[in-house]
Amino acid sequence: YGNQALKIMLKGIWNLSNICLSEVEDRHVVDAISIVDKHLCEVLSATPAGTDWKAGLNPYDDDGESIHTYYSFLKSFLTSTQLVAFAQKRVDAIKDGRGFHHLMQAVEDGEDTAEGMKAKLDAQIEDAKGAGLNFNAVAKLFLYDVGVVQPKASSRRRRMSADKDEKKSSMIINVPKFLNRCLGMPLHRQSMLTNHLVKCLDKRVRDAKSTGEYDIGIRTLTGNKVSVKNTRAFNFRGSEAMDESVLVYSVEIDQGMSSDTALKLYDEAIQADDSRGQIKTGFYIDRRTLFKQCPPVYLIISMGRTSPNAVVVRPNNGRNCHNIPWIKDRFIQPSSRCDDLVKVRQMWDREFALADTDSDNAYQMWSFGRQRKPIYIFGGQIVPVINKLLTATLPRRNDPYAISISSKEMTLPKIVRIEIGSIDEVTEGSGASTVLSPDVPDDDVNVDVANEPPAVGQKVARKIHGGTIFRGQIVECTSNNSYVTEFTDGKRIEMDGEELRESKKLFAAELMKLTKANVSKTDAASTKVYASDLAKTATQARPLWTETDDIPDDCERAYEVEFVGDVPKLFIGLEFPEKKEAKSWNYEMLQLWKYVLRNLAERNLEDGIETPAKLFGQARLK
Image 1: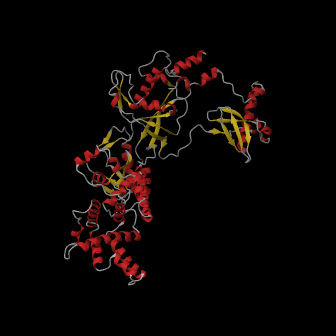
Image 2: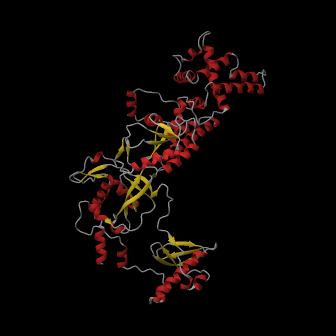
Image 3: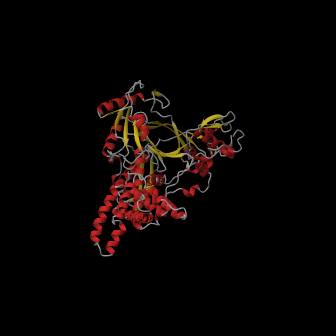
């Protein structure tokens, strides 16, 4: 975004745009007047009387390259449409003896006081600003001094030639090069330009956030509703990690936007709306007869007077960003503005209901359903196999049916964030949280045990959702009246006094139940863990493909296991692009996510990595 902001900033400077995020300071105007007056004094002294001063701006044929370039730059600068009036005022001031250097000389010679000179200079500063000397014009002068100049426009042939030139990349001005060039300026000029760049960056990021395109490396898949339709689990690491699964979530997204959300978005946009923008924020309705089901309704949101883009919100596909000329032509020109929010809600709800169909289906012209095709997200324990997942986007080199392997490049997935639920819901935590204070009646336990002073070695218990209870003990009493406990599942939890009391009550209650069932008190109170081979087998995920020797054609199924557990409300995973790849002898076309699974499974089989069915059978036999 820094380079994007710099590009936008420099474009405004090169074009001497009147639209700018920063106001020019007086001291910088004085610097610019000083540079211009010095050059115009030289030009006027060499220009014959009665000759237009513009004719003297041309460089001489025998000038050196640097002088020739400098004269050409200032000629283009001073004769531009935006600054020719400013240049004429400076010429008149110099001829009348009111030029910057005349004012300075008058003070030096004692003909004027510093206060008198300042008053005259202040008047000329305001005059210069009114004649077009704005921030962008001053910045263009300053940047030329450090070699940051506007690239020359070239013909198509020259551009094609430059594409092949290895030196082309060195001509591109990026943020590091720009800041390095700024180091050659006086400090106050450095501050002027870097502060302006920061403003442009903030504006670019705000625009990106308002359009939903802000990329922080992890893209959030959003919509009116996001849900997981199905979850598949695969164990690709064999005996090395039998309990680690790669999960493939089938995610369904309703990409529309309800009227409640649209009206809330409208209220927020109206408060921040800049009335000087190229378009006005509001709802628009297209009543052309070509729309047979209902008149389409749009929410158009201005992104400010300096932005070339605006946001279009629709009931069927939510929020999207487009350039303003296209929005005017496609949405605003054929539509009429509607300020009746009751009517807007009714029409929005009607189209929202019509759009409740697949995104491949058009419910009327130019309008498609809001239900996206399922997308497939890789999650779970993917870090240990990440390299295998990425290389599985490439055909195997020993695959006799592979197509043009040498020309293929690895296809990188996007990192995405999935938040399950409706856009209007409040996200709740997943079902894996720990309950430290279950409802245990005091009359069922030894209250004295729960109330005795805490000490290292005292027994505690904790219950998690699903009913499982883990036993443990106090391992540390800290100085701030908190207590560290360690449980049989390996977790260490810090508790306060009340949490510890409830945890001790739970242990006492469970101890009583076990002793009533004729379990010896020593065994019932033990916190030691013994894991038998049968117990280990019981915790191993059950394979869905039970044949140990027969591998199916869709060989990824050989590594698939039963998914046990809840889908988290929030998770991060990998999304491969929606494209197809040829696979197998009959060139079956597979979606890339399935192609990756199959390729990975085939490579595992070649490498001799055991399938879950084989591992499960070995464990049961043992």
